[in-house]
Amino acid sequence: MNSIFAGLSTTIFETMSRLAREHDAVNLGQGFPDDAGPLDVREKAAEAVMTGWNQYPPMLGLPELRRAVAEHYARFQGVALDPDSEVMVTSGATEAIADALMALIEPGDEVVLFQPMYDAYLPLVRRAGGVPRFVTLQPPHWRLTREALDAACSARTKVVLFNNPLNPAAIAFRDEDLALLAEYCVHYNAIAVCDEVWEHVLFDGRTHRPLIGFPGMRERTVKIGSAGKIFSLTGWKVGFVMAAAPILKVIAKAHQFFTFTTPPNLQAAVAYGLGKEGSYFTGMRADLQRSRDLFAAGLAELGFATLPSEASYFLNIDLPASGIEEDDVSFCQRLVVEHKVAAIPVSAFYAQDAVMTVVRFCFAKRDETLAAALANLKGVA
Ligand code: GLN
Image 1: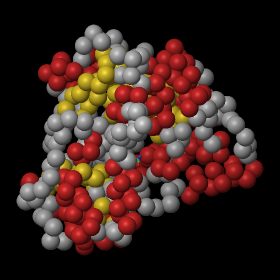
Image 2: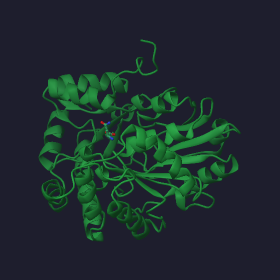
Image 3: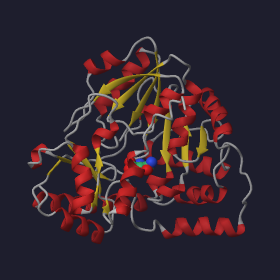
């Protein structure tokens, strides 16, 4: 069949999770925690299923959740949002990204993408008729440069699709990078679609800096967040999209015909969760940081060279620096079959000029899971 989508391969996350099941491997590929998630938030959802509203909620989301989202971002990031006109609930951040791209891109518009990029971005940009222009970031620092932005941006740039913190690189962009990007968005009159799903998952005392807070960005940023990452409940698929009213209005037109709504009981539970006290969020970060440190120490002991992990559920290894002369794809295939550990080859996040030397592991797992993976990795490096 002649379709942009017919030519796509199955997402690397699904592929690796399937291989992990087939080979009975420890799955450190697809990014999801292996614990149950916060009990009180799950209880709220259960209660809402049993005693609450189970028919269509309002198209833009439950008013209580939109208010909770606005309050949450005012509290944690100093962003003032009008819950009635600047916040919409979606079925996960991926839906929010799809809505924004379908609504904002006209065929032939240029869209700037930053490689490594989350694997959903490029097919959605293409389906919307966008012309991709790539900025390629390099390990180990993955910094933005003026030269790369000059080469990718032009008067035809309509949207800049940005992810901060960056999956799979596991870095949080620095203020200088964000200020530079903001300068280019303003100069080229582009809209920044900013996927910030990892905004609460930062380590070593870092705090998240939303792009929408930079000069000139309030009116041209589409900010996207996700309860899945905030509450370690990745299967819930409750996301939020925030933008100035004229932009959000157009994005809502796409949402109404894609999913229309998101399960109301999960929305109610997320509204409750977003109001939790600060200690929940710092505790979640501290737990993940401990897992990161445990796994990083184990890898180092086995002779693997790791890259800095500043944010997200991920820790990357550098193959050549670990003494492994093999590309990331064949390494990951061999790893899952012969050593029973699933990981993700980072080259899957590039459309061109792929970096083939980096492999991503998800450390958001119980200690036993990490220990089992480390035992299987013995002798590999
Ligand atoms: N965000 C998750 C990751 O990066 C995967 C989500 C998915 O499977 N589509 O691993």
